[in-house]
Image (cartoon, rainbow, N blue to C red):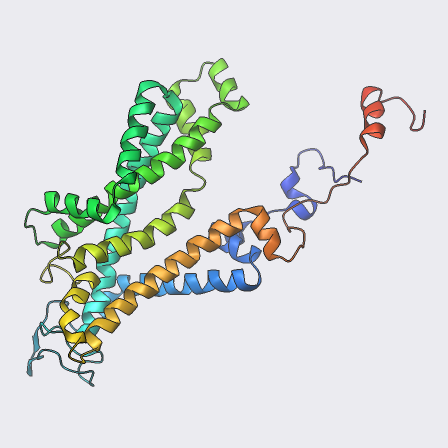
Length: 353
């Protein structure tokens, strides 16, 4: 028999279709409880790496033994290219900076750039996507053409051009971070615009949107109350993947010499560029640890994004479960159409008549 909800209750409150409430219903926690096997291992590994990155960035002043631009202590100068020792656990760079301190402070710079770039990209991309998909017409055509032109341009080269235009020799922390963030934002906006526009075009044809128009709701109310929430459901998945891409773009800008100056902030790409000559001399510690930091952070964010993307698709989630039925689907029975139609047409008719 089909599971029927009692009056005053909904389907999600009955039987196997009940959704967890409280902290168990949080987005990442819910996906973690749904995952099994290798998929859960990937998600847990990604969350651990991402959590370490966030904690390191937030607690950088407490974890770093020295400042990112510090060259000496009370005992004297650090010295250039010093091997790992008790005073400098990861050695020193060619410029005489402490490698461990530069790696830790570099996580804070990366976090600042990710937050600024992703926030600006979401605001601009979602707004333009909603307007383009909802109103259509010539405005939609212009925005789509511009977005496709930007999207087809090499992202790193575009970020370099924008960084050169915006930086203008600025070496301050805020100026360098904002220049890098805006450079990455220009690359990310077309992605959000295209995703939100496609969802908006689909949603505006739904019955509840037509009903809102019939009762006299204005465009702004429809876009903000009915279209926005449904058109942005996939953005958290894109956000995690774009965060890892922002790390690589920032490192690429710094490696090519268009990033943040070392006296303004620590940046992993810049440290890698300065350590190129050390590799041929057998000085490995100046390049291994900044490069390892980039790899681990990108790997953690990518694992989280890919795992959430798989769990958002019921087909992939079912396949991961090895053919087991999803836990959030209520038990229902299939009634043959030939037996169901007479009963629906004539409720008073006895079964079998």
